[in-house]
Image (cartoon, rainbow, N blue to C red; front, top):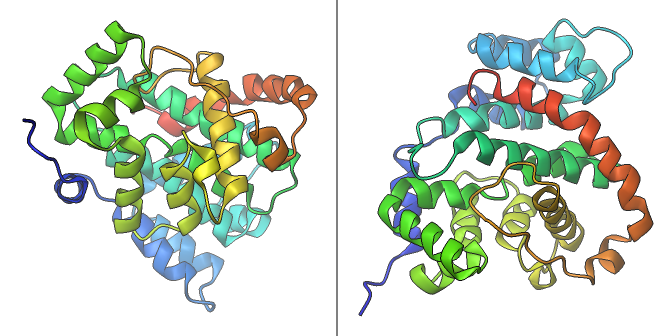
Amino acid sequence: MKKKLSPEKIVNGMLKVASLPMVYVKISEALKNPNTSNKDFEIILSDDPAITARVLRLVNSAFYGFPSQIDTISKAITIMGQQQLHDIVFACSFVNAFKNLPQDVVNMESFWRHSIACGIAARILAVYRRETNVERYFIAGLIHDIGRLVIYTELEEMAREILLNAKESGQLLYKIEQEELGFNHATLGALLLKNWKLPDSLVEAVANHHKPMTARRYRNEVGIIHMADVICHAMQYGTSGDNFVPPLNKKIFDIIDIPAEALSPILDQLSIQNNEAVNFILGDAA
C-alpha cells in the first residue's frame, strides 16, 4: 500500500527553499498604499539592480512595442501603471525563486521556454479579447506549471518515476501524477500561490488549466490559460515534462469567444514576441 502524501506538507516544504524576492514583497506592500509614488517604486527596485535592468530591457522590447525609449522605472510606471509594473517584476523575479532546481530531473531551460511562451500566448489572447490588465494573463500563463517545480524539488525520485511512466505509457503527465500521488501539479501549484497570497484569479487559473470546465469564478482566465498551454505544446515551445500535446477542450471557444480562425494571426504574434521575451526574462538564468 502506498504511503499517502499530503499536498499541504509538500508545499510547506517547498516554502522553506523557494520564496518570492524581498523586492517583490516590498512592491506588493507599496501597491496597497494609495499614497505610494512612482519614485517610491523606483527606490524599492534600486535594491535589486538585476531585476531593475531586466524589467527595463523587457519594457523596451518588441514584446511591448512602446514608441520611445524607457530609461527609468518612473517612466515605465507612468506609461504602464503601477499594477502592470508590479506584475512584470513578479515575472522577472519568479525565475530567480526557482533557479536551483535539480537539472537532472527535467531540462529547466525547456521548462522556462514553455512557461514564458504560455504567458505570451495568454497575453495575446487577452489582448484580442480586450481584457483589462493583460499582464495578469501573462503571469497566469508563466506560472501555470509551478506545481511541477514543487514536484521536481520536493519529490525528486518520484518525479523521475512519474516522468518515465508517462513516457512509456503514452499518457499525459498530470494523469500519472494523479494516479501516483493522489493529486497533480495543478493542485500543488494552487496551494503554493495561496500561501504566497496571490490573487484568486491566478490560483484558479493554475488549479484548473487542464480541466477548464471545472472553473467557477474565473472561467475566462482559466479558458485562456488552457488554450495557451495547448497552443505552446502543439508549437513545441519548450516543455514542462510532457511528451504529448494535451487535448483542447472544444467548449473553450464558446467560453472565451475567440473564433478558431483568429488563431493564425495569434500564432504569428506569438512567434514574433517569444524569442525576445525569453531572452529578456531569463537573461543568464536559462
